[in-house]
Image (cartoon, rainbow, N blue to C red; front, side, top):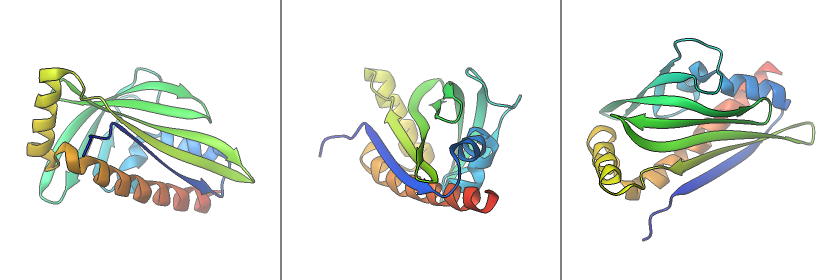
Length: 161
């Protein structure tokens, strides 16, 4: 099977885009929603383009840190960050927020950044060793994780609106 390099999942939330964006752009919330991310440390909130942060992740017996950098924000519209580990690019994650009916369509997207020869193979190996996930399994785990994350964001946003 060919490797899949990107993925998107979306849901409609019964809350305005401003509220949903505000919740998601505070990366410290991610540990409440993501099935892998347990905690995000942001040295100087609030989020701005270029802001760096550290993610602490766990899946089963596997624990691993990641470094992130916010690479794009358009308030109430899009929030994007890049993840690396041990100096190697891993993935771009992001969220788009679009008004739909009286609520918001939130789309979570992921792009694999492990595309550069030897460095990509090293990043793949690190993912297998530290996260227990080889590239062939990563897409299925990401899809399930994205659905869980979006459901949890939706519940939080609905309760807060």
